[in-house]
Length: 122
Image (cartoon, rainbow, N blue to C red; front, side, top):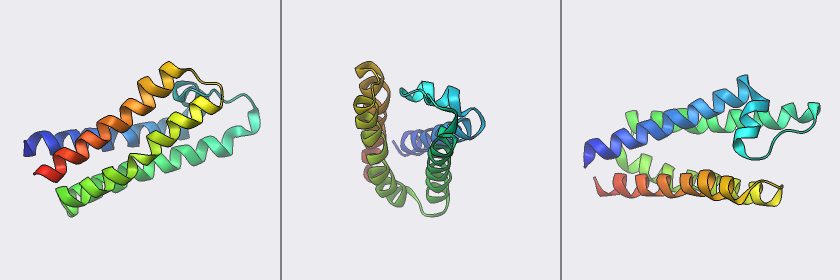
């Protein structure tokens, strides 16, 4: 179970880092994938904030996993799960589809919480 917990945590951290990089490098495409396309050309600052937030979460998660261990990573994941839960509400409030809100963002929160549970168990 330890290998599974660490592997899942590392994959999730790397995925969030990838999403952050995508928002920094391809902000319009990333916003469309998020579920709320950027409609105006001056939305760039907000898309950059999203990229920086996700990139920071990914790097912090990897650092905790490497340097502090499973318990610290578990607490981090437990707290970070608030972000995709919030993203679910953002997509729903701003015209995104329920499929994206629940199929991507809410499902991500469930996976992150499951990973936290696994990490707490090791």
